[in-house]
Image (cartoon, rainbow, N blue to C red; front, side):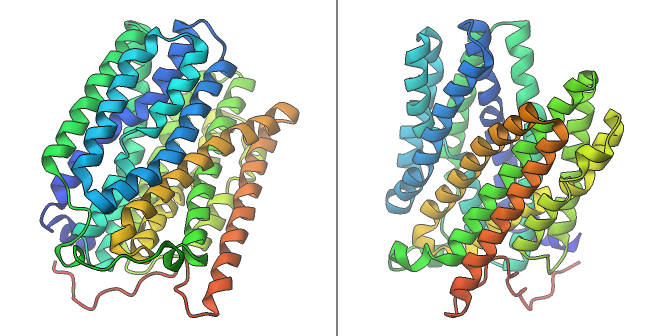
Length: 404
């Protein structure tokens, strides 16, 4: 645990981790509130809810790199003013819109979503300069994401069912406003002091094979995770064990957190491509092994152990490959990759389940992940011959000894 103690002792890191944990809670609750509002408030089906969320997803994917460029050029605070006001306005007014207006508003709301994930990753890169400690920092960040996803959606369902969808949307508007104000007040650094006056590097010099490879892995990892979650739900429903959904998801999250802790504690980790292969390959047999909910949970533990490490590794490599003056745009592209991976993974797995069985959903999710891992590997090899850094190659640990 020396790595974690040394990392958390760095100035500003503890405050950043706590701030980002609470800042993510509204973000994780948003999709559930939006879905239940369409179903309960507008009386539409889940297909219509999926259309609204797809529009929001496209908006988020387009807006994240744009907001990152705003941060790179003008700083964090101007961007926060725009997106906080825009997202609060969306949640306050969306309840009054008819369904077609909701679809359009969801896209616009996605464009101005507060990019909490990108802000956190930029701040970690600026505050944690030693690359051996960055692994620990990004691992803690990934574990925090797991915890917020255990809290946010459940809280959203509780408010919607016990009060109303409108109350949940108001609560989200208040929460997002509070997050924006807190981030504005804290104004976490997105560049270190010695990075402030570095010259701008043209995009074509850093958005090359290695960076495209890490973006592919980021999207691929979430593709596998989204497909796994949807398929697990379908399996539990088909076998009449839907009441154990919370227990299965808790086991998945716990295994991912354990994997993240181990990943952050080691000085040399597996490469990104290797982690992606493990994440993908280990989910394929899950549907064939399971016959009861607890066997399904155990079958998903091996792939879940690779979840947080794979996500954390993408943050490490993006921070290493992106020049400081373009870090906002690069982390925005990473967020877009995460968003698009989730948008593709759930429907692809769902289609496989509908056409065949839940076991096929797990297989398709894993095989899709393996294909993406192959693409990332080829992108890496294409630039390696020219001397570019290799995606997934762990950065050399600093020679300074971490104090006990």
